[in-house]
Image (cartoon, rainbow, N blue to C red; front, side):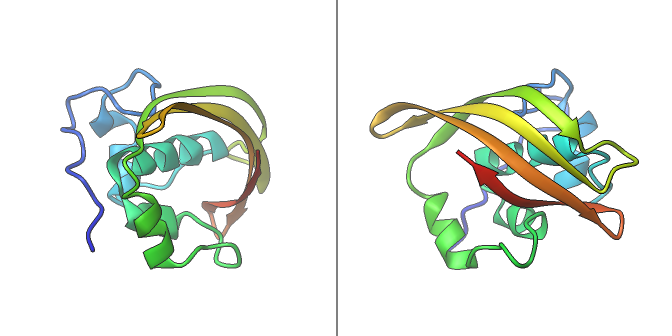
Length: 138
């Protein structure tokens, strides 16, 4: 089952809401042309991956000890949820010279049941120069 939808064109606004174009923001991270420089950049790319159904990026960016099953993740992306807005509320550490950090965010989605808001504090670690999502507290 393929869940990846057509990603945005590079010249369109990135789904993560930063204000940059997809080609200057999350696009190169999803395409593995560059690494996310910070925990926040990885969080934004993961939100974008959820928005466009990029299972591969989500799995790659999940810490191996916490990574879900591929089919389970793919099925969860097929539930009719459409992610429409991301707000980064706070960050703690997670910068280019850190090895760990947190990102607090709110993500808004439209689901078959109506509007849904997810408020989470996500934990990230950097291993071998690559930021990885560990877990989140809702």
